[in-house]
Length: 92
Image (cartoon, rainbow, N blue to C red; front, side):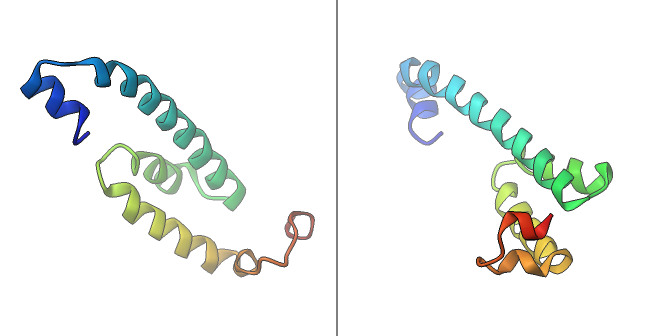
């Protein structure tokens, strides 16, 4: 964003944008799938928790706040998630 976009708009060179844009789009799709999976595993309602988690990636910098909110909520609802010794089979 701080290199490719200025190069495109101020330098007239859109080579980096054509390379980075598809990668960025793919990463966002992966984020949406993982956010949905997390919400399903946590047992959250679709609205507003799941939708809010998924929308957190659309607003620049909002993902940092949403990640902190989700992390705290997971630990409140599932305290065993904080223990690295707990195996997946034991949590299910």
